[in-house]
Image 1 (cartoon, rainbow over the protein chains, first blue to last red):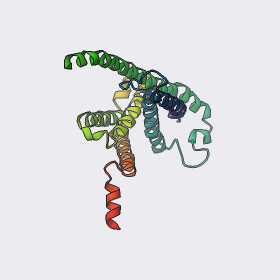
Image 2: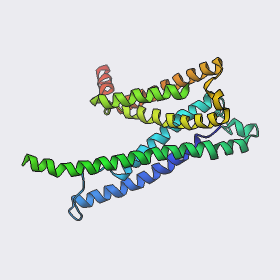
Image 3: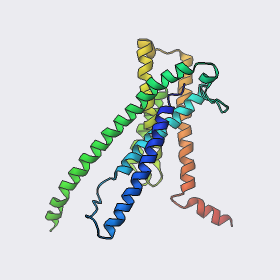
Length: 138
Length: 104
């Protein structure tokens, strides 16, 4: 009915957080360049970039699911845009959003947490290998 | 069927992104995100449907199967159309710019 709306709302929130974080990271990187802070770790993926992975998953999925809802006639291009609201099934729609929609957003977020953990582990391993490789080359 | 088709599209897009070095420049990542995001969401949808229908979920009516397959292919086509549009707008290989210059 409108389950895709929940991940879409999460995507908007994540986009805002990523935008704010990116601004802070850019400001910090500028400070580093000016020599007022510790050197930047170039191999590390920034948190804002990791949040963009989540945003892409959420927006991509919500977009294709919105198309599915248009296909099934659940979303229409005229007000109130949702046929469930028009036909007085708003309660059922809200129930679906609270169950299926929240679960969709939750599963995507869980998958993203897994991706971040794997990414962190790979970065740590790369950081450990880097000094050893430098020693071997010397 | 929609879930199955989208998962296949996601796996193919991910493989292309991983194997071809030019894929990142050509924004194949956009397809990867869209297909995996939709696949995960449809997986949740499928779980809820399975809980409701039990074993009947795996024996759909042929007309429903056909409609779902048609929807799955349309979803794949829509994502590809979005990708081509983004590719032409961002124009990483300057092909559009070159074509426009040639016309002048």
